Image 1 (tube, rainbow, N blue to C red):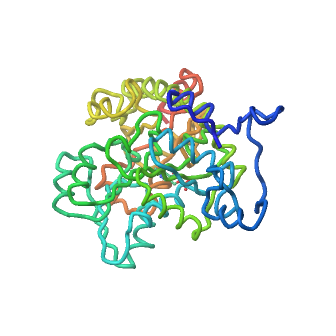
Image 2 (image 1 turned 30 degrees about the vertical axis):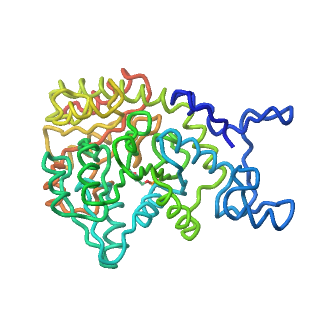
Length: 407
Ligand SMILES: Cc1ncc(COP(=O)(O)O)c(C=O)c1O
C-alpha cells in the first residue's frame, strides 16, 4: 500500500513510506492514510474473500479480512519497518513484550531446545523465558555476551536460539552483532536481537547476520510517550510465516490507531535520533566532570569499554540517547534523593520519548532481581539510568546539576 522507491534514503522512506498515496486513480486523495477502524472487510464475492484470507488479493496488493489478522494501518507500519531494516517482512504487535513472545515462538523454542541469552536482557524478557518457556523444558543459558569470548561460548553451547539486545540496560554495553551471528550460524542457531535502543536509524542488525529484529515501538519509534506497540522484522520468509501464524493465534495485533501514531513517529525518527544522540553525548561529558559522579556509562565516550565497537557498528558519530551514571554516594537513598530533586527530567518508567526520563533499575527494570544478582551484573545502588530527551541540552544539564548538589 505504501509507495515504494528502492532508491530512497532511509530518512525519505520513513517520511513517505506507509502513505496511501495513489493519486493516479482518484483526485482528492488524503496525504495521510485514514485510520481504518473496521473490524471486518467486504469483498466483491466469496471467492475474493476466500483469496483475501491468504493476506494477498488477486491484484497482488495486501487484502484484509478481519482485524485480528491485520489492518491497513498496521500493514503500512510493517511495510515501512521491514524496508527500513532490510527484512522480507514484519509483523506488528500490541506491545514490545508481545513481539518478544512471538519472536521466541517463531524461532522454534520448544521442549528440549536450548537458548543462549545475554545476562543483561530487559527484565520482563528474561521473566517471560523463565515463566513461559522454562517450564516446557526449554534450557536457558545466561552469559555476558559482551565479552570477547562470547562467540566461542556460543560455539561450545551449540544452542538452538541466541537472543541479545544491541545495547544493554542500564549499563549500555554493546553487543558485537557480527561475531555473535557468525558463531550462531556455525551451530545452526536462530538469532534474535532486540534493537529497541538503537532503531534502524543507528544500526540494521539483519545486515550483521541476524535472523529477526525486535523493537518495542513504544520507545523511539513512537517517540512521544503516547503509543504502545512492538514489531518483529524477519530476514527469512519461513520465520515470517511463523510470526504471522503465531500473531493470529496470540491475538495481540496492533490497533489501527496505534499503528497510525507509530507511523507518524517514524517520520521524525531520524531527526530525533540525531538530537537524542548529540544531547546524550553532551550530558555524558558534563556528568563525567561532575564531583558527585563516580562513573558514567555511555558508548559515545572514548572511555567506554566498547566505544570502538559502537563506533564501527552504529551510524557514524551517533551513540543513542541512553546512558547511566553512578553517584559517588552509592546508596539507594542518595539515588532516590537525586531523582526526587529533578524538575525537568521525569522519573517515569520508559525510554526513547522526547522527554528526558530517569529510572532507578532496582525499582524498575531490575526489580525482580536480588541485590546480589544486580551487583553481580555491575549495577550498583547508586546507578541511575537516563533516557536523554530532545529538550535544549542546557536545560537538561541545569536540571541534573541542581539535583546533584549536596543534600
Ligand atoms: C529493550 C526492551 N525490550 C522490550 C521492552 C518491552 O516493550 P513494551 O513495554 O512495549 O512491552 C522494553 C520495555 O521497556 C525494553 O526496554
